[in-house]
Image (cartoon, rainbow, N blue to C red; front, side, top):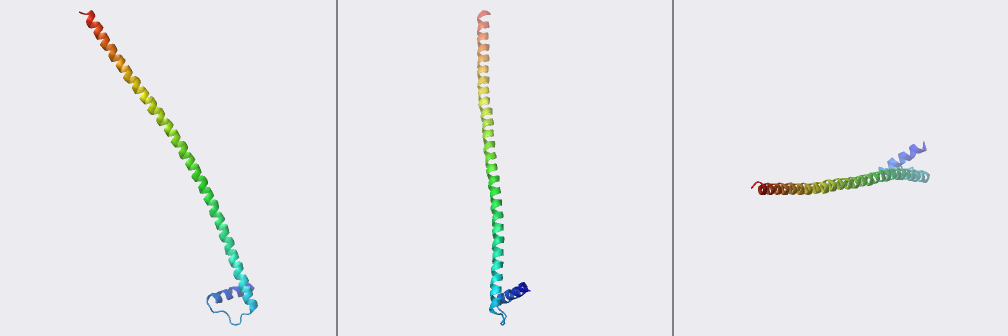
Length: 118
């Protein structure tokens, strides 16, 4: 019953049509009820704030994990790229050296044959 009276007084207060017969006790109850409601709202906002903080911490953890994964992937790709490039360059060098050696051998063989076949 008291809550209904307090709610009625709150409605009248906000419609600027406060009951003229409201006593000081009614006004005190109204103020207490309003304070309780604000406290309840504050507690709810605090709870929501804590939930958002928890979500922020989770996003931060995910962000750190994704950054670490990205860093490890970049390191892996750099190692693969270095190995492929380094070994490919070495292989190309060996192929060129082999071709020069074969070409030199062919020229030497032709020179040898040309001197002996005269």
